[in-house]
Length: 344
Image (tube, rainbow, N blue to C red):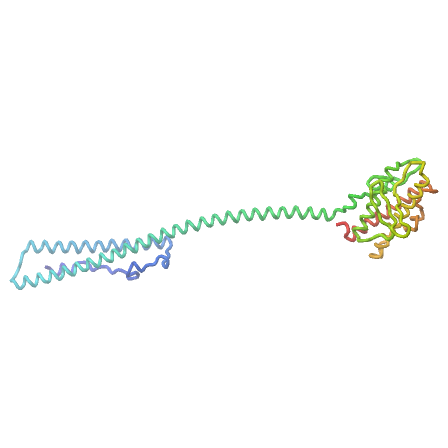
């Protein structure tokens, strides 16, 4: 055996002891990104290749020793042969031990490489799951934003509708008080009559029924209860009931029946006077709540603005003007009711 040949073998490469036992590597505690895992795999492959080269060198060395023994035979005396044989055996044992160590280290490196590759695959799966979750969340976010925009639009439409309703005067729409020349009108029905412009009682009765209904509605909205009278709206056949003293019911509608004209006109005049009294009571109630509010035309018994509302012994022109003044007072009460929040 030639010691020089032995010394010429490359020394075993030092294996890093960062992971002496591959079984102790916990992938969950050593999370690597894809680039780091690739670098580690490249380094491990280089170390495995180096270990294989060293193993091949030792195998070649052992084969050369065997061939050398066969070619040269035994040289020297018996004692020298025994010494050379023992020395070769020791070197062989050392080489085999080194080779075994290298194999174990190579196996450990392979296990580390396999663990790194498994960890890399696990990271790939986690990354794929992460992007799936991101896409799902983005879709949910888009759906929520669409729903939010839809709700905002509906809220805007509802708010505008509410503003329009708040600005709407319900009483003006339901009870349109205006004028038509010398006549006062409510919803287009004229109150009064003139010699050159006769008005049918059906139209007058409809206007009186709407007027009584409006006054009764305003009183209810303002929480006011008439004293001594009760309004009974019944369209063109409305009436006013006297509930104090001598109880009676007065019809607030006229007739063309001449057979009962005198008796009927007396009851009709009583109904008109009672109606004026109710308008005055409601006007006084509004004035008490706000002293600035006062009926445009003062009322006293059967007169409004010094004009009588009675049919008997009255001129058509004055009666028509008196009824027009009555509608003006009712219109004033309507505006007061709206301004005090009673129309909402």
